[in-house]
Length: 329
Image (cartoon, rainbow, N blue to C red; front, side):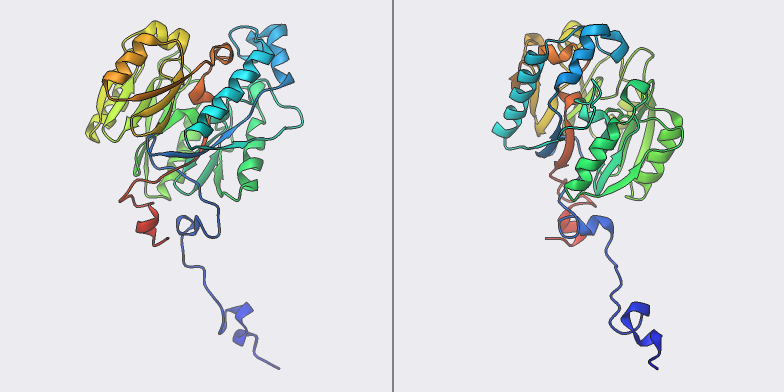
């Protein structure tokens, strides 16, 4: 009888150990995905075009965490126009599909997951109204062949719009009404496996997400909301070479979501139309502004940034996660 230790199945000759890291396998075993910055060229996004679920806003908009009733046809048309704006700017748009019974807030895809350099962290939204939305994001991401590196569990609550990549080795994670300490501890451990540090920053009471108070538009330029961005966040940004500029008009930020934009690439953004003071300010900073009318969707308490789940950006040249550094081609 043949000694089983001579068989490859038992570790004998012919056994091929898996020596590459998960990061090394992106692009071969796994589909291309991941980010390690907020500003490198955007390649792929996950969207959900709203449908009949928005009818809940007509009955009691506050009960479903919205600001006013929505015109469903107009909201859908504006969302479709946003998706086309991405395509026009070279970004691949992936549709979530049609969950069995989507919640009214399912369209806010930035909240239900966040990308690391080597796959997704599935979030756990903080309110009962949004419980379970993350399941559909997880299904879509897995279906695309992208790895899911972790899901927030236990009593942790976390929404993806509360995490911002400052450098490939540093992310800010906001604690507030949407993300709690239990989730932060999990995220810090997850990022540690990629050689990255998570820095916790507290949001002022009455604010929603870090995304609404901070955007990084280039390797050395951040845009912030002066009365809402925590000192610790500003300290971390400046320590890593960022100049922090402050939005010029709080009314446009509050009513027009002027800071709730998506970075298409270094100093190029997709932003809500109807914010002329802020747009002119961005343009003086050398930022190219692609504008879209998504005012109806704003009645649901979010805008372009909230609506967009980021699946893939180019990784930073020289990054520890870059294909060249990992030995991938």
